Length: 337
Ligand code: GLU
Image (tube, rainbow, N blue to C red; front, side):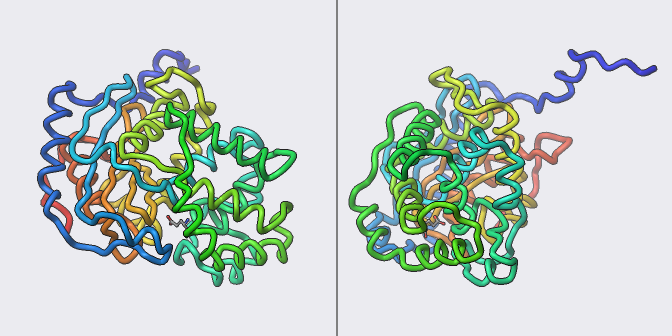
C-alpha cells in the first residue's frame, strides 16, 4: 500500500517563500512609486464622510509571516475598515459556531450582483448567498453568539483588534455619518428577518455591522490582519492565535470567490490571491504561508475597488511570485490596465 508520511504532506502543502527582506522592501517601494501618480477612479461619497478622504493618499504595506513589515507611502493614514471587516468577522463567526452553520445560514457563492443588492436576496429566497455582501455580513455578525448586541459588539471589537495586534477604535464621525444614512442596510436586515434568516433584532444587527465598518485602521493594520490569516490564524506580530487554522483556510476560500465585489473573478484571474476590499479604499490581499499586502488609496473603480491598490497588488503578485495558481513564480506579462 502507498504510505503517506506526515512530513511529506507538510512539505507538499508548503506554498513557497518570499524573496529576502531587502528585496521585498525594494519591490514594495517600486510598486508604490509606479502607481503613486495614477489618478484614475473616484472617491466614494454615498456615505457622506467618505467623500472627505484625500484622493492622493496611498499606502502600501506587506507584513510577512515572520511579522516583518515592508512599507511605502501613507501606511499610517487612518481610514475606516468598511467591508474589509466582513472577512475577519466571518472568521470570528466560523470560530464560534463552526463553518457548517455559517455555510448553511449565509452561503459561500457569489451573487453576481452589487454588494448592497436587495434583488439578490429576493432572487434567492432570502439567502444572502455569501458573507462578503452586506446582507450576508449583517447575518454573519448577528450569528455570533452573545447575550446582547452590546456583548456581540465587544466580541467583534476584541476579535478584530486581535487580528490587528492592537486595540482598534471606532471613528465616531464615520459611525455617525453611516448610521444616519444606512437606510438601505436597514431595509436589507428587515428583509432578512422577513425570510426568517435573522434571529436577532434587525436594527441592532445593522448597528453592530455599522460599527465594525467604522473602525479606524491603517494600511499597516490591514497587512497585519491579513498576515494572521496567511499564518494559519496566528498573528505573526503578537504571536497570539486568533482563529483556528481551518477557519483561516475557509475564510481565504470565501475571499477568493467573493472578496472583490463583482470583479472577484477578474481579480483572481489577474492576481491569483484571496483578497477583500472596502469602499473607503482599503484592500487586503493574502498570500497563504507568506504574508499579506495592505493597501490604501481612496479612488475607486466602478465596482468599488481601489484603483491604485489593485494595480499595486497585481504588480506585487507578479514581482514577488504570489499568484496561488502559478507553477512558475515570475510572470513577465504586461501590467493589467
Ligand atoms: N459600510 C458600508 C456599507 O454598508 C460597507 C460597504 C463596502 O465597503 O463595501 O455600505
